[in-house]
Image: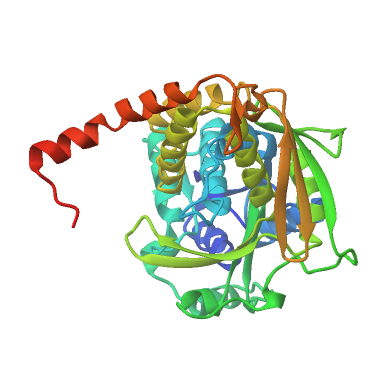
Length: 397
């Protein structure tokens, strides 16, 4: 039997893949990659379900720390928000999941890899590109995409093969991970409808009208919350639990897919949005004007290339080196106020705060230059425009 690794989620599409591929004579080894959001009981359920469907084995690969080290830290360094909105929750996860799946396939000597993506989304591109780059000799099999199956056809197939499970589709599809939760439903297939309150996994549960939180960054990484030190991933999870009780971090992102069509997705990302905004506020105080300018450009490029599945292009390693180098002075505390459905970054405290310089206070006073110095500086600075206007006889009527 040909050994095959299936990127397995336990949903209808990948359940169909297990049964269909075993029927075609493959030795199916189901594998899922934990980039956050998995509970121990859910892993046990996935294991049981995969074996019931006919898989030869099931493996859950813990990649939470790797996800942070390889991807999330750079999304924070780059303050990456796709279209100034979306923290790339799912697209970032898919890259690491694809890498771990193909590495596992190579490890067990599989000659084929399968996934349950359709032909109408981004994930098919991300998975296939990663698989082809790392293991170009491994065959990629995609039953749902190749057969253009409807949900009803998949359900009928499983019923015909004696699989009795509740395949009724939930009203909303939810994908939860360390860096946020995506929410899809009938509303996100339109251009005008918003998601209702009950579509979001986290509800407003706090009885407090507000809360203040202190986030401590060391060289760009979140090292403590309210002076309690922990790992970066644990801090993300703790902040998310706190902020989610205020129902913070909800939005709908509309963007361009890799295959050229527009797409909408709802999301809930309390910790990512707070961390990115807090980190960016700290950077505004401690980095130079040109550091901030070029970081914004390269951060946007990093997010775009990651979203497009180009993570393994060497230019990503080049950008990561730049982003990491900019974090040498990004150390300090950021003070954030949480309110129901929103948050405010109040201010920062850092030994590298460039506002603490004794040169002067904006709009108030100057100590390191005279009035004549300012006049001379302004005169020279305006030379370029004066010359252009003079030579071209520009009228400003």
